[in-house]
Length: 204
Image (tube, rainbow, N blue to C red):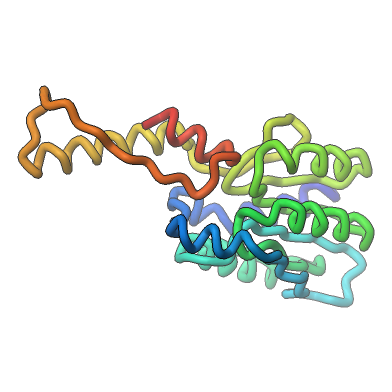
């Protein structure tokens, strides 16, 4: 029952946005953002008096995609009896900030954690620590390089990469390029440590 209630936030809140893509940032903007911490402290968005607590930890707050995620979580929170706390980092480079938020959630007695991991490797140990305390962990947008989670809701990123490649070819042909012409395509990643990004490049 405890895990089922924790998952309800996912089913109601983010199912409608998983087919979307993450909004990108320019390299200059990302480097500037990386220079300072970007932790967004937890805010209770529903039922603060409840003794059951779900913590949502995002990896970004920018762009239409994440706005939809936040809207979905907020809407889902209104339908739950549990207290839902929303926090995260304001760019995907502040990995330590996201780890600190996970530790804070455990210390405050989280009954479930919904995490959008900013780094597939660095967040694996944190997820293991959470699950060792019998706290369910549900991932969205990206997975981790570990099996230490209870469920993951994300785009099929290899398939998304294939779709992007096909669309790119169509655009190149429409621009007058021949299928036999040697062409170069640049790929700019928002993060090279995200499994989602790695899979999209593999699919491409």
